[in-house]
Image (cartoon, rainbow, N blue to C red; front, side, top):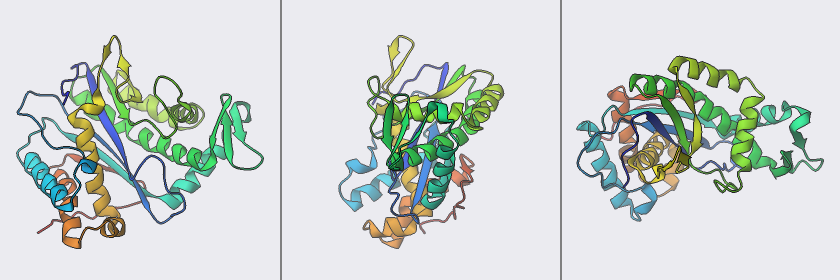
Length: 285
């Protein structure tokens, strides 16, 4: 993996669970956003792969145990995590409010109520609602990003995002354009301004792997992406019990899957952002 990131930057990798594109037909489901950052320090290789790369439940749980051991050994220097979870029914409601309040001058919902038009493009209305909440979610992550980056003496701080459904970074990006449009035309703009003032430096968000200055940083291939993936699964295992159990895990295995989040919480390295769901931390013992 590519691990080293220029010291002047502080990155937090953002991962959504189950994904950035929500199943809006299940309003009782839960969506989570996790942001992970740490200060690079030379150490032995990190060999854990992403959750989806392990086919069997047994190998997944073995990887969880390995990750927990690394957390207990403080393997990652200055590791910091922020997490927020919400019910999809609230996501839908908030998304509708945001889209209804967008200025008519920049676009609007089509007469058949199937698409949102803006910037001479259009995206499905259900996807637009999901992106509206995603915009709120990453904005709420801007405050912990500012705090963690300031403590690390960085000069620039970014949330690194996976490409939103329908976007091709560097070519066609209506999803991230809508995110920026919502921020610029809502109270969320003030949140980013306050985060910047707190950090006293450049702060924002970008797709993972995009160019910064003249160097290409393949951040999606770093440990940050893997950590965000596993921690998002851990937080989801705490909050969305039924989904994890229906995925083939037993109750005991669900507790094991959630253990990384419990360890980080105990070590005071996990900041919970209240999106309407309270996590109940427990151990697998």
